[in-house]
Structure formats: C-alpha cells, structure tokens
Length: 380
Ligand code: GLA
Image (cartoon, rainbow, N blue to C red; front, side, top):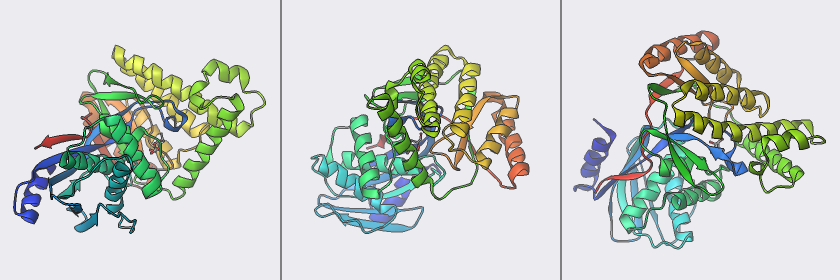
C-alpha cells in the first residue's frame, strides 16, 4: 500500500471520516554544493521519492491534534500559547506553527495523521520534510498562500529557533520547491531557483554508511564560524563574494586552517555552477568529475568526511558504471551520493554494498532515488 493510501486509511480509522487534504513533503539529497548555503552560495540538491505525508482536516478551532503512525504517538497543542515541551517530533509541528504565527498568519487548528519513509537521522533531511509537510498542512487548513521560498524560510526559523539546530536554507528550500525529474540550483542569497534536468540515462544512488557521529552540531557551528572569519578577512559579507581568482591572489596572510576552509567554499561554489552547466549539456561524465573533486575538497580542506564515508565513496568510484561519488550533507557520517549509469544501478548497488561491508563490517542502506516535486497537496 502506498503511504498516501495508508495515511487516508488510518485517518478514517482515527477520525471516522475521510481527510479534507493529503499533503506530502520530500527529503533530499544534495548532488553538489556542500557547506555553501550558509555562505550565501549555490547548492544543487534534488527532492527524493522518500517523503513525509500528512492526512488532515480542519477542526474549526485553535487546537492541533496529530498522530504519528510510525511512532504510535499523539501530539496535541493549542495555537494560542504554544510552549516547548520537548515532545520530540511534535516540536517540529509546534515550531512551524510558531514561526507561521510570528510571521503574521492566522492559523486554524486541524487533526491529522503523519507518516513517512525518509530515514531519520541519515542526513536526508527528515526534519525539513516534516517541517515543510507541516507548513503545507497549516497552509491547506488555514487557506494560506503557498510561496515555497517564504515557507522554507519559516521552516528554517522553526529549526533554528524552536528546535535549536543551526542549519542553512538548503534543506527546507529543496523540500518546498523541488521539481519532478530535476535537481534545483538554489542561489542561497536571493533564493532564486532553476530546475536543472538530470543527465539522460543516469540514476542517483544514495549510499547510507549507517554511521552517525555525535558532535556534528558543534563541528558544524565551528565550520560556520571559520567561514565567517574568512569572509571578514576578505572584507566581504559572505564567502559567496570571493571568486576563485580573488582567493588565489589575496589569501596570503590568512591563517592556514581558515584558508583551507575558505578554499573549499570558494571552489565548491564554482564547481556547483559548472555542474549546472554540465547537466544542461547532459554531460554525466563532467558532473561526475565535479562530484569527485567536491569529495576531495570536503575531505581534505573542509575536513567533514569520515573513514566510513571515504570507504563508501571509494567503493562507488571503483565501479565501472559510476560517473562520480561524494559524501553529501553535513558530513561526519550519514550518506554518500553517486551518479551511475541507469541500467547498471541495481548491479552497482549490490557491488558497493559488498565492497563497503568488506571494508567496514557494516551493512549499508542503499536507495536508488528519483527526483520528485517539493511540498504539495496531493488530495483535497
Ligand atoms: C546540513 C544543513 C544544510 C547544509 C548542509 C551542508 O544538511 O542542514 O543547511 O548546510 O548541512 O551543505
């Protein structure tokens, strides 16, 4: 049974009536453009066919009641005085309601069921998917206009200020604005987006190392601070404003560590724009080459990879059907992403699974992904 059917069926069981709306919002994988979003730079993620689904109906009051089918837990809260009670997944719902109200929207209560298949904690943005599905649910119940960039910013605000996790805008933007069959070039300063088609006859394969590191948040915040220090050195608002040429001619005197961090960001922005051009030409080989170069830069200059991610990327790159592979997301564990010849994707998945297992004794999770739309109402 599809998750959409499951959400409808379970809604009926819980509330004795059909839902008024079914909404979905996807997780994401980033093809290239890593640790560039909070430097006002460019990213090139795609929304994947793993999503959070909510079936709901307005309640005609100011109360929200949501049942998680996957966790078998209910969360209920009033919209007049939302308080942080550490309810886990429920805080994402409350945080989004809080951010929408802070932005001046008048919200209606609703009741609904929530389910999904974005692996939690794998680095595929299950939180952004939950935030954007919640925003879509409130927009449907309260008849709010849906502007993807505005909603993404409110989702990011919920994550930063309510949940308390520092993140850039990429994950919420792609979950809100993804386009079927395409990756999305996002200018993280203007929030302009351009849909970029995937090269013909290729598949995007997500390779989960099944390793999760603590300290990711503190390492992430440290990288952000280092990037800000580099921007101050160059006298610009953000590293987005430094070209590769300028970096090469003006970085003398910059502390060695900060210099390497900045080199990653500056070259990664350039690679992301080159990757966009390669995709428009249908040039899978060039896109793959840029992904490989991104991995080296993240591993050696930005230092956010891990032994397991490196092992996974090497296993992927060795396969003859692979155009390129890299770690993806914040790093220190989580997933790698590979671009492979479509007709060989199943064989590739099997080979890389065996290779990674023999290198690490860990059984990876592999997802051959398609690019989907961003947050949408699928049934009303
Ligand atoms: C995490 C953050 C994003 C982005 C990536 C790194 O996924 O949530 O905003 O910074 O790390 O590219």
